[in-house]
Image (cartoon, rainbow, N blue to C red; front, side, top):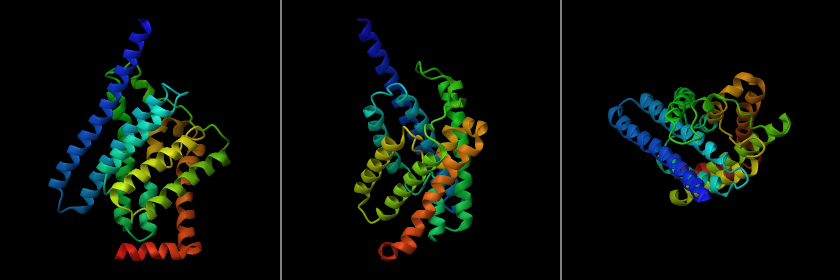
Length: 272
């Protein structure tokens, strides 16, 4: 009987966490609808608000997913399933935004975005990442589940389990693989592309999660590990900011110089 009560309590907490994440997605979606109606003639402000909301949604949901994954560290199937599902949700709801400074940098380097627009989006991502910490702290302070403790969102839990060179390689490689797929999957049908990218992200998290967390997103890393940046800035700056950017640079160099035929085909198809 005690075991059943404990299981029921765990299920309640899990359902509450899922409901919280879906509520964040819903509220962010409503805010995007309002933003689209109010800022149709101001593209910079429109892009800023959409990118801010997208980053806020991604970071808040990832905080909650990380919390759920820590409850069953020996059984990663359920957290990976949730990662796949919410990646699909983000892919469907965050169309037109990247929520990732590396994605903005890739578009600027490939000529798909002006420096001014890129700067606006990067600023929005920074504010969204920092704002998500306070949003999730406020939500956790409500004590909706036994795992929700507001102090937890401000604690440093170092996810780097390998030495610095290996951590840099992991994050750079994850960024390289993901953005290569993002660039070359643009010709795939949208419904299939979202599933392919979700499966790829889930695989990368499974492969590199135990080493560095497999974040490959500087804004998300800042939100998740802000306190760690304060305590060990240089290490986290190199691993979670420089390494993903290095992966982007290597990807662009490879497609532009070593595999130009593939990049040219992508450019031609995009123009058509």
